[in-house]
Image 1 (cartoon, rainbow, N blue to C red):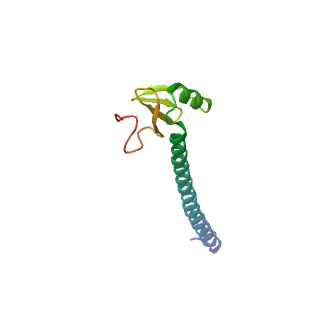
Image 2: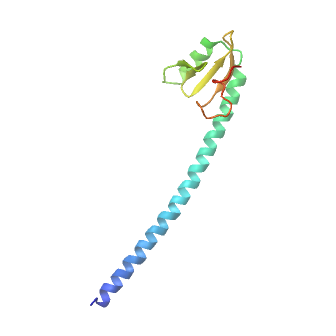
Image 3: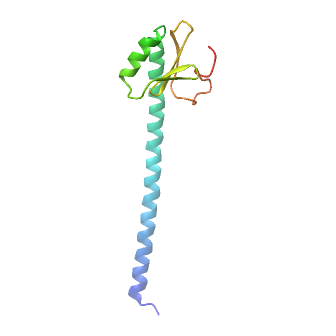
Length: 118
C-alpha cells in the first residue's frame, strides 16, 4: 500500500516535528528563566529606589515632592486614598503637608501606606 519512500519521508517528518517540539520546549524554559530574573531585578531595584526616595524626601512639602516627581513622569498627578499619586508612586503626607511615606505600587504591598491612617 505505502511505498518504502513514503514511509521514509513520513518517518523523517515525524523526527523533524519532534525535534521542533523539543527545541520549542527548551526555548520556553530558557525564556521563563530570563523573565523570572528580570522580574526579580526590577522588583529589587524598585525597592531600593523607594528606600532612597523615602530617605531623601521625608520632610519635604507636598508641592516640592509633586514638582520633583512630575519632572520624571508624563502621567498627570492625582490624589486618591490619602496619597498624591504621580506616575507609579503614591506619596503619603502628614497633616502638616510633609512627606511621611511612599507607596511604590498601588495595592501590591501587604501594608499599604495609602490605605492606612499614619
